[in-house]
Amino acid sequence: DTEVTQTPKHLVMGMTNKKSLKCEQHMGHRAMYWYKQKAKKPPELMFVYSYEKLSINESVPSRFSPECPNSSLLNLHLHALQPEDSALYLCASSQVGLAGSGETQYFGPGTRLLVL
Amino acid sequence: AQSVTQPDIHITVSEGASLELRCNYSYGATPYLFWYVQSPGQGLQLLLKYFSGDTLVQGIKGFEAEFKRSQSSFNLRKPSVHWSDAAEYFCAVGARVSGGYNKLIFGAGTRLAVHP
Image 1 (cartoon, each protein chain N blue to C red):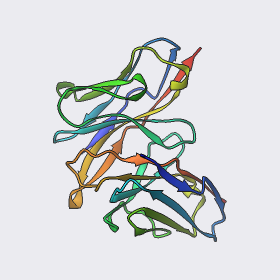
Image 2 (cartoon, rainbow over the protein chains, first blue to last red):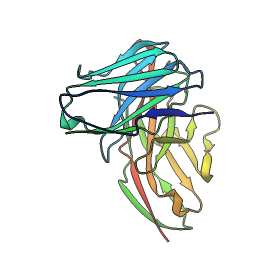
Image 3 (cartoon, rainbow over the protein chains, first blue to last red):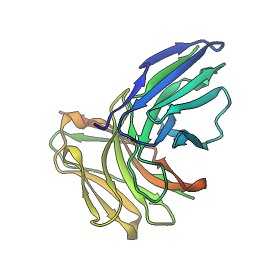
């Protein structure tokens, strides 16, 4: 099973709202990722967790707050977002996330976020 | 700097015709190269990857890619395209970042349209 699940599929929120995106995998992977993808653009890395520790933060604004409660779950907490944050948010996972291993990242279907 | 270039933004082929999507990379060490496909509104699905060994890599859905170090290329091919192949195709390189972790650097993508 190489499935990564994400909920919700769609989310509409106002600029004052607080919401969360959820990602789950049961492949035993110890690295999990959040990517942001704007329309007609490639995915851009936001965060990487390896062994439940935040390993990479690509200078993402603090209105995005990731959380990895356990090795299977990854959350992205959203607060005071701007309309330009509207995008497809993709979660991915891989074995451990270390460079040099050539490991594959498996992606979820994404959450389409619209900020009004 | 590490980068991936996909020179063709948009390609249109007839069903049954052959296909080649181009990808060029810039990376100092031995690259780990990937091709992903994304249908509209969906996540990314891995088609194939090059890690080491045989430079001709077979993937899912009848796709193959050839790694040519001398040309810094990793072009994707399919001998006969089906209408269901219409999608966005991303080439990516696995790059080492600080702390020894891994990130994917994506090309801009090639949108494939298939005429019946």
